[in-house]
Length: 500
Image (cartoon, rainbow, N blue to C red; front, side, top):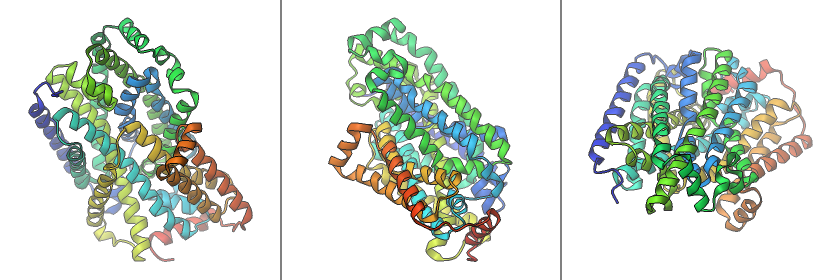
């Protein structure tokens, strides 16, 4: 069935022009990249306004736009739960994790090494764990963008994911982190503007709130219009999704990169706080769009969307509006995915280059070759994430299951190291190992997954509990080696430069 109204070529050309513009902006930004730190962290000089723009653009990503719209289609106001969790995650980062800017870390692995007494084993092991975590998030964004493109253009889903990867990969390759930040600043206005215009038109197109109420009542889903749609999703499911999103942001390296690249810790703190508020307010928009789509789709019997609610946003963009506005929404929707994917890609590059490369080769990258190595590493990172998308289907379930299995233990390990002085490096390793093992069992052992999901609906909460218990028990069973902050920081720098 043709959902583009016969305007596939128009949409594709518009998308290519948009990407070309992003590439041009990224090229202009690239002229300020004089060394590797400029390319990877924008010279650590990002002011509040650019931080706010790039954090907000990343927050309003695949899950909080397409995934939340699909969730709104299924569960009404339950589509807002994702944004609630994300806003809480930003609040935690703003209150407790922005002072790390003053230590001039480059990666979360370095921050963890510092929190666990400068131990090199932590740094080496976490480089691999964190790279996998970034691949999980990056694959999610590619999957979302590919799903969207596939729906609108009719392109094979795998090819659509590949096109999405190339689309943002080119301007990231050229401009580095500063290119990402500047393009994000442009994209956040397109993104919010597009969603607001669609929101204004969505409810009238559905026949108003009375028609929406009637549609959900007819489907025996009146609960969907209650507080966060809790009558249908149940309280534990809503808590599980919100917790998964929030704790994953605390443990996601891409958000730490915003701290490390900030001009100071105050700018980072304010940017996280305000971006959380923006996400919380935005979270109700996809829910309303999803509810409007449910009403229209059920009234007209659009089987493709009923069968796969991930197409909800694309359906609304192409069917409710004309081709011109449809193009705007196409760009707004894809902006939501690529503005998140680009920063995740760069965080993955930094980890692979600064941590993993140094661990494998026993030497650091020469400063004069850092930009060249960064671009090579970017290609590798994108390709690995693309392979991960071959196993991805539903956006929200991907976040709940894959991200919820792999990332919470990272966050728990970081929280334990920062706030509990008795934590040992062995306890930290136990935290990440036992938590990740639990997550992998959830992903690959069907009976185990069914048992856990029957209680918690997802893995994030039990993974966190297992990681916390393991970290505490092993820490209490091992000797704490007391190291001053100055000594721990010196060990981090020496590890980066391969002097120790």
